[in-house]
Amino acid sequence: MAVNRKIRNVSMNRKVAICRNSARHAALLLLAAASTLSVTAPTTQAARLANPVAVFSGIDKITGRITTFDVYIGETVQFGALQVTPRVCYSRDDTEAQKTTSFVEVEEITLDRKIRRIFTGWMFADSPGLNAVEHPVYDVWLQSCKSKSDLPPPDSASNSQ
Image 1: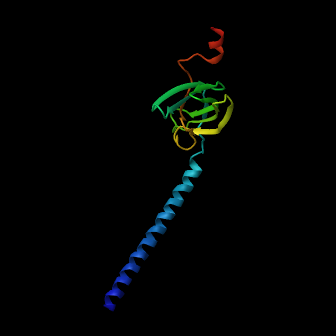
Image 2: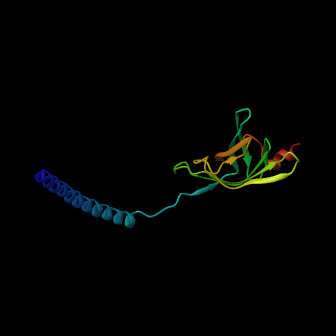
Image 3: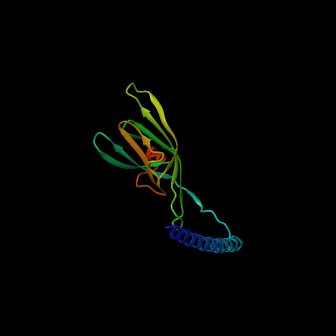
């Protein structure tokens, strides 16, 4: 029995030694590859595009109805008892991995007609649960940003009436 234990330990040590040597070689190869990449490839950042329209989705938890709506930057749109105002909406070019963000202010109109701010911050379209507005009756989250909307901008809508 003692002999078996010794043989097992030796074989395990040998495997560990082989793994350590191959790990060292792999680390050296990765280090060499990384150093050549850092020298030859310039670092670039994806261009951040500012968009005039933010697209939100909201759910009415009582009816279960999900609504998607466009909001121009700086415009306030009412969804149920919530007023949603995007301040900026950034996305990336179509050639880059999408990362859509928007800085949003959300206010609630209470039953006694007072306006109370319930959310101010960044929303991320790729992680809607991270900073979505969670209200007892309504939830609102960012879907995307876009350059055009089917709705007229707020300035031209007031001029045409």
